[in-house]
Image (tube, rainbow, N blue to C red; front, side):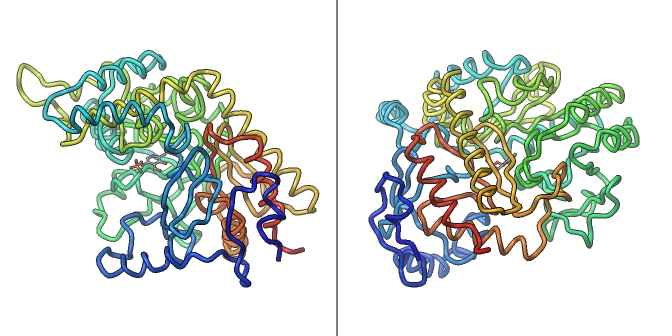
Length: 457
Ligand SMILES: Cc1ncc(COP(=O)(O)O)c(C=O)c1O
């Protein structure tokens, strides 16, 4: 069993040796989890932290691209709080801006200038952002966007992509995780309710299409016709496997929604990290409404709905009366989030996105070379600062192509565990993302850990 020195590739960042079982000691994390289980259901407020099995790792602090846990283990952070950290942890510019703002108070029932600054910055970057409105999470943003689409069109139905994750709103969750026993016909997938307690009406109100199936999308949109409020789309859905989106699929959705009078709600909660003006600017997409979250909060809780004036006016009070879609929240657009978001987005200039593309490409191509050298039939998808490893070589165009067998789940989970024990913290199931703080040495560390974490032949 190699110890850390074999894979540190010169960074010498980690201090602990593996235990004989090949894992680092994480006793302090285990003890905290034990305590947590006595007062928090399942021991944590975040379902996603238990997806990799075992007890979660409790964080002590982060700095740049690295995180240190409560046992003193250090990890190259390729999770970045589920793709919300993009500059790096504890960035001094963001920290200074937030500290200065905190000294003036943290939350008020008054609007603040930082909200206007961040709104102007974002609307200045993206053509389709005629107006914007802030909330506290991506889930809230997606929920508000779908309510706005329904209010604007006066129609009840939504169509979304099979396997795509859009947060925890009932309609957005539909078919986010179906399996061969319930997913139905590939050309007209079933709507599968996700949580127990989801109203049965979701099955009538949400239609499902397969990613990159242009013909299927056209047919589904036309079938829903004058009942359809919107198609909800993420151009690089990670749970679909992050395949490249085909331009024919995008144009099928855009053209056919216009034909039937429905909207496109583009979920850029993650894909906004793909470029200076988000994925929509890179790809020339013209959505009616966009949902944002994660990076635009500079490390603080955030969400936003942005878009064309027409649908965004559903949030506007009419002659002093309530809006069609009243929206707000105690902490919506709070000054701390708005300040951090503005500082982070200002740091994210075009050069920063070019650097993120380079780091991501080095990780993806490095992984491909490692798999080739090892004669392993694995593949890597992703773009910009995002990547996903698949423990198979099937062509991936949609959720069903990337859906893993139980053996493949074991293989990729074991790969993730071995990466973790070698000081790399991924998201789950081979998914990862990098921050701007990732150095060339860090990339070397990542690839060294990956090479040492492959399954034995
Ligand atoms: C594409 C997408 N939409 C929406 C959400 C929900 O965002 P939040 O976790 O801020 O509620 C996520 C979260 O990962 C996401 O990836």
